[in-house]
Length: 87
Image 1: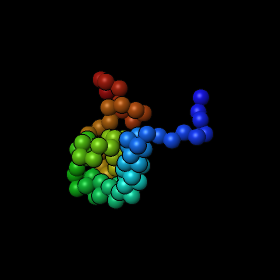
Image 2 (image 1 turned 90 degrees about the vertical axis):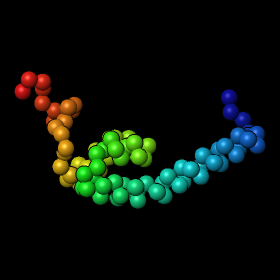
Image 3 (image 1 turned 120 degrees about the vertical axis):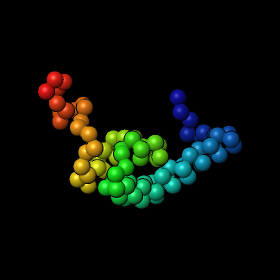
Image 4 (image 1 turned 180 degrees about the vertical axis):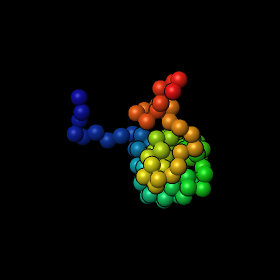
C-alpha cells in the first residue's frame, strides 16, 4: 500500500537522482549515437560490434541499418526473410 507522505532515505533519494540524471543523459545522447551508428554501418561496422560498443541492443542497430538501406553482410537466419534450411 502506498503512502502519500513517502520520503525516501537519503541514500535512496541519491540513487534515484543519479538514475534520473543518467536517463536524461541517455535521452540527450541517443540521437547522436543513432546518427553515428548509421554512418558506422555504412562504413562496414556490424550490428553486434555497435551493440558491444554501446550497450544497446543488436535490434536497434538492425532497425537503423534497414532504415538507412545498408546492405546486409550475411543473409538473415531468423524471421520472415530467412530461408528454411536446405534451400
